[in-house]
Image 1 (tube, rainbow, N blue to C red):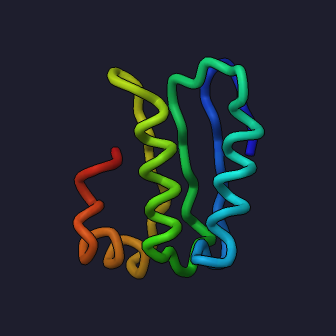
Image 2: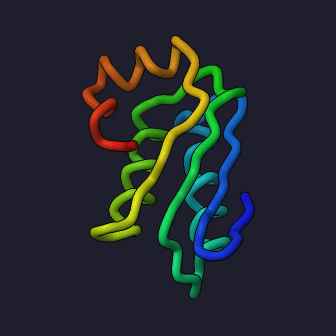
Length: 94
C-alpha cells in the first residue's frame, strides 16, 4: 500500500478471504489514519480469489471515502470479474 497526494494504491495478490481480509483491513486503517484520501486504486492483476470477507473490506474502504470520491478496481481477471458479477458488486466500484 502506498499513499501519495490523496491517492491510496493497493496491489492485491493471492487470496483475500476470511483469513487474510482482517489483515488487509488493519493495514488499510493504519495507512489511512489521519490522511485525507480522495481516491483508492486497487490493482487486482495478481489476485486469484476474493471471498465475501474480502468484498466486505472493499465496501468498508469505499464507504470511508465518502461522496465525490472513488474506489477503482483495475486489472481484473476473468475469475475476479465473475465473482463480482455473481455477488452483485460489479456496479459498486469503478
